[in-house]
Image (tube, rainbow, N blue to C red; front, side, top):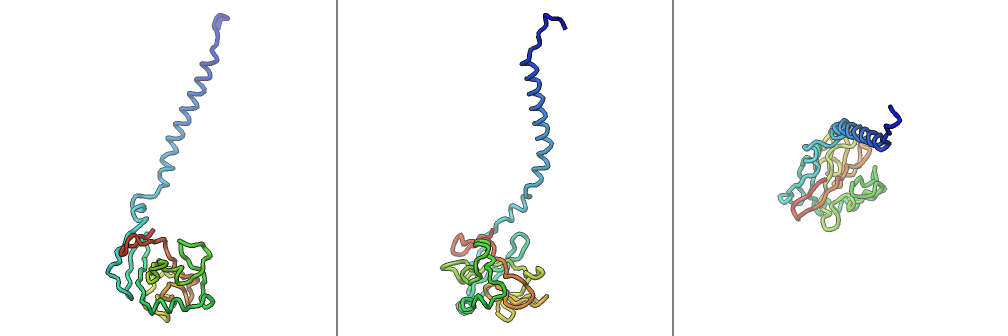
Length: 187
């Protein structure tokens, strides 16, 4: 190089910046498929919420729906069942925690905290998997006329609270709401 040739420092800086930007774009292009594959599948997103028409359920009737691959018990309880559930003292319960996704983790397992709430106390919605080993309990059965798991002998009352048997916790109450007088949205 002759002494008459001058090196342009701005050109070198531009080359460093352009090379760095190309490397960043290339790294992002390589990483994107790995990041994108972690998103939930469309079929999973479709099952995230489900709306169930309960207009046909008279007091004393129940139905089993499916949500996220699990059975969901929905029951319209009678006045007698409500009175029996309200009369249970928390000290009598094997698990005094509500297990309601809408409440604080340590909320008490009162009948009102496990039901649809004020004005709809007769409605109960629960995940229908026994908390012992995941079996599906039978409805309107057992010593407390709630749910009974014949596999290992767990008895739940009409509020889905474990009362007798090997199950350690109450049936889980998923996030749900009434979006109309006859439709429940779960999830």
